[in-house]
Length: 106
Image (cartoon, rainbow, N blue to C red; front, side, top):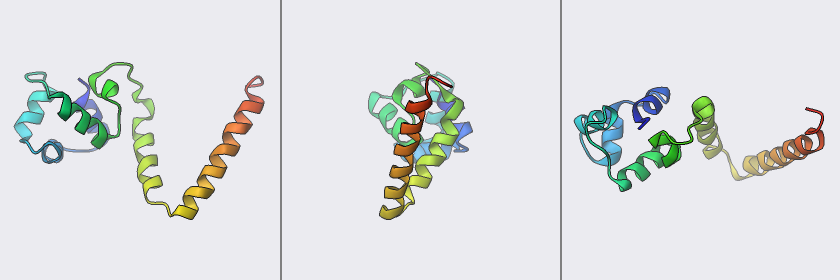
């Protein structure tokens, strides 16, 4: 399990995670040190809270290179107005189209 690694990268402490799961800091410590394993429900809750997939949390198919950037992007997007989201969507579509046009040259 990559809980400790992900938690530290996102600068979240064990007490914060404990509150999310309605448990104790000691339980989170046990998860991180592989003394006990969280339930499937807790894995899902943690993954949603940490904005990662359950696979990433469990250390399967992990690509943590952009974890912090992705999390910050989601936080930023959540703060946008509907108009700003619409403009962002148009920009993203243009980037995707450009990438498709130039993919053979990159």
